[in-house]
Image (cartoon, rainbow over all chains, first blue to last red; front, side, top):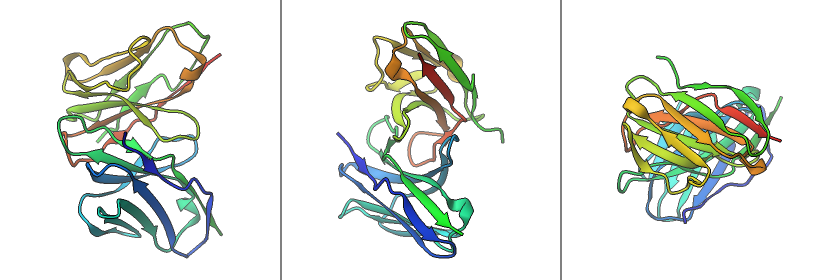
Length: 113
Length: 114
């Protein structure tokens, strides 16, 4: 059974610093990876997707994927207090028609002003 | 473009009662998912529809949960009878197509079973 592992935190980062969030997955079939941000009491919001090994940048966010090590990470540059949230890592298979996401438990990120 | 709509937003029921949730996906999105999120956990997939057909319901507790997506648009998820452990947020998500496209979540329905 596929598992996605994240450190639950909390991870505390000073404002303006780089926040680094990590995720590992157990199933080599997983092909696509997603990072969601979830504020307390709200639903998950898609912020990044990555499908190929290497880095993918979008504004202050950089997703990194290493399929050989089964490792995904999210870097947030110039962290702002509004980045304080739980970050969910998710993996998706690309085989067959079923493509529901398997989520980790999330990492609680706190940006200290 | 309007996002995924869900109702009700909150529901409190007693155990052994039944409850139904409704979801309207983003216009044009063929794939619809229902997830269950228990407090402190990530969402867990319950069922996936492609148009009006079920693609994956392997994690749906079929003895008490049922779901349908008539006409390939709106969907309902029903629980009958509810148990205390069903207390969770029920999230509906949609995506344009199967494959490497993002899934977008609705606001969720928070269910409390007493």
